[in-house]
Amino acid sequence: MSCSQCRPAGVFPSEGTFHIRTDHPVLLQSLQQFLESHECNASVNPEMVSADYKNLPSLQTLLEGMKTEFNKQALHSFFCSIENASVESNPFKSWIPLGHLYERIAQPELHQVIQQQLFTTYSQPIIHLASNEIYGYEFLLRPLADGTDFKPYELFQMAERSGLQALLDGKARIASIQNSADAVPPGVKRFINFLPSSIYDPKHCLATTFKAATEAGVDPQDLVFEVVETEEIADIDHLKNILAAYQEQGMKVALDDLGAGHSTLSVLKELRPDYVKIDRKIVSFCDEDIEKQQMIRQIVQVANEIGAIVLAEGIERKEEADIARHYGVQLAQGYYFGKPGPTEKFMILAK
Image 1 (cartoon, rainbow, N blue to C red):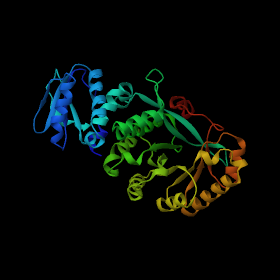
Image 2: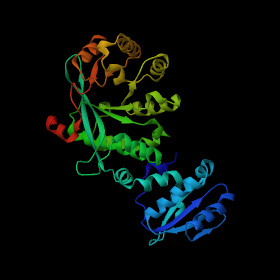
Image 3: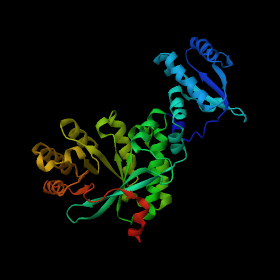
Image 4: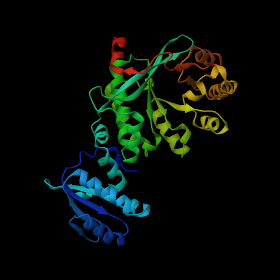
């Protein structure tokens, strides 16, 4: 991953020159023949093949054809750049994998949502089970009321396929911090999701997040950053470094969607987060399932050993809240306590 994946790439020109380079020069001739067979005036040099395109749909068709014509190894070696036909520019400044370019052009509306931050946040209350008082809010990415409609998970899937995951994840974190500044009173926690896979150098990649908190006047102690890939941790040492970077700034960290079992509980002991969120799959109808109750008991026991606070998410029934309370879960979240709503509405509560 490179810094270019955290920066907006702007919009694609509707007409321009399409450049392709590869580390396998033998493929350049095949690329030229492919483009010419699609009635493109292609030129080739020792470094790349270039061809003009008249509109983005025609470029998308070319990319689709290449995905059919060439094998996966060849496609993975192709890096692309676009030069605006009407403005002099250096095509070497923004080379991206062919697959990323295809996804961005094939889904222009979602690409625009990410590039221009055309989204907002909703907030869902988190309750302290002992007092039934508001403990904090989780901030969730949602479409603008008058903007492009999308499902958040689909937007993140598209971002991953197009190489924009780091950009979207960073923008979402900053939007949550900024929107919470006036909406949530000091002392109330703000839980914000993040993707560890989007952070390759914690101190560098999180600098804008830390700056946003300072500029918004948000107390670092009120921020809790949640790992949303708890079940897919590939590099635990890297994740440790990320969590440490947050904690060094006075912020808190949480493991989200925590299940049970030896491997998960071992990860919990090794990472030692400030908060543990029990997966809604375990919480759902836990009052009718002894095994789920034992899972909750195990998670609470390990959390107590490391000094972490436990939060049960996805609570939709009183019986589930009662079980969570019975086994020592301190915090709860779910439709039983409140559905996510526009962050702006919480500004009334803050005044």
